[in-house]
Amino acid sequence: MGRLFIETLSGPRIFKCRCCKVDFASHDDIVSKDFQGRHGRAYLFRNVVNISLGPIEERQLTSGLHTVNDIHCSSCLQILGWKYEKAYEPSEKYKEGMFILEKERMLKEGWHDVLTVSSP
Ligand SMILES: [Zn+2]
Image 1 (cartoon, protein in one colour):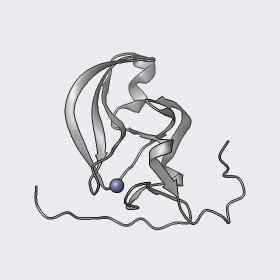
Image 2 (tube, helix red, strand yellow; image 1 turned 30 degrees about the vertical axis):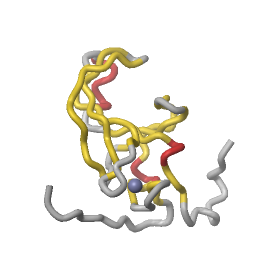
Image 3 (cartoon, rainbow, N blue to C red; image 1 turned 90 degrees about the vertical axis):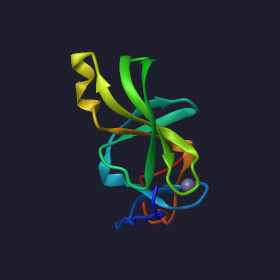
Image 4 (spheres, helix red, strand yellow; image 1 turned 120 degrees about the vertical axis):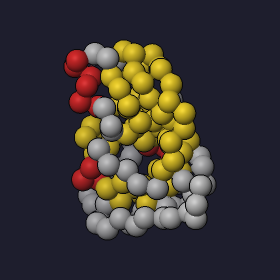
């Protein structure tokens, strides 16, 4: 690996790493908020930055067999969720190339002006 490159996102609603506060994803890139991670609620994103991928593995998820990589924060290396490389069920194919980020691993910094966002 070369020098660590941290990308910065612009926009009013950016999810950041809870540990090291690098940017991960924009709220506009959320595809679904209705996913389950290892530790609770997770979001499906179409685009995520500042992550590194773990080894590819086959994993049986609640929605069927998938080929996934774990994803880590490229800065502090905490595990964030996973990336869908391949789905076998036709109904799950739309997730290929998308990312699951666990809500509890992320920080919503500077969102206080957004009234629709609240934590249960
Ligand atoms: Zn981090």
